[in-house]
Image 1 (cartoon, rainbow, N blue to C red):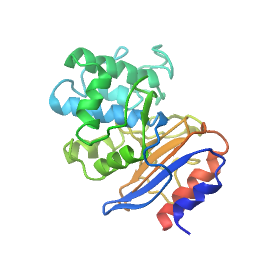
Image 2 (cartoon, rainbow, N blue to C red):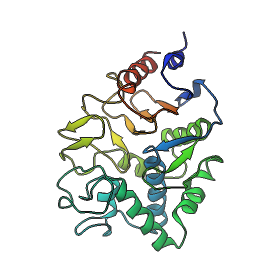
Image 3 (spheres, rainbow, N blue to C red):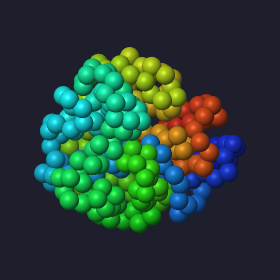
Length: 267
């Protein structure tokens, strides 16, 4: 049975999924052009746009941004001290991994101020248009308000496996631990010590429990969203998986997502 056929028994109305290797699409199921809410998978697209802005010289990773003592790097790595949903500073920068969608909204405003381009337009021009992601948009927050299709995210994971918009070293650095040793919480999965994160990309590290599979390497990077979506890339086996659903993340997903990921890696 094809690996992704496991999704046929999931308690969702619609699901679209793909497995991508460096040879191309290995397997896919569902409507590739259906538009899904991404929730926090949006952060990967927004972070990529910020990294393009860094390479273009519009902003610098270590320039001040956000609360006192915080930088662009802190905001991307959820180390700025900002709260999850608002701009309250709840800890000094660089001392805790506090997952913050608000931090990505601060980043979006910074890009707008420095480039003179509205962030949704910047994301489109810097990432979506060159990758031909024609059905991806950002009508809401840079932290959780994006929409996309499986076809578009297939192009995006191909970019993550072999970057064309960024220097390879830029992406390599973005998928390495930033501010090592910080403890924090992955929403829905509890406290992790440490809670490793890159520049916008969550890093699997040794987190348990986790939304990826038990066989995913510690170098796996990606994100999941409360809309019932996830995207991961495991560079150790040069394999990526994207799953989009229309059911909000919850207890239903916790056993099914790792099961699928492990099946993908075994396939």
